[in-house]
Image (cartoon, rainbow, N blue to C red; front, side, top):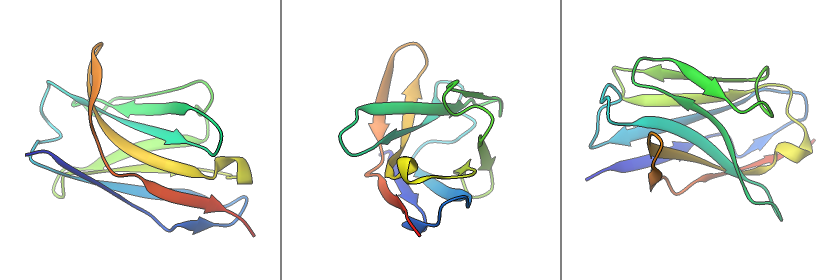
Length: 119
């Protein structure tokens, strides 16, 4: 049974760095069958794919977020983390950690974690 749980601060001030953690159960980060995406949804907007972490540890980012986003992993905890620098109120969104079958589908989603950027 795959289980995905995002966690984070909930409220972040503008210009700060947002840090989120995704704890994964039931599947190893080293499985070559999957990659792990971060996707967000802002109020009134559709889903935005931010970036992905592969089993090799390689990362790839949407041009929209490249340059201020990083994704890392903690193999001992089977966790991945997202860092988004220099946030603005436009970064307020629900952030999802998603298991991804390459070139196929986003097949397992966490429940998402709400982040609000406000002073």
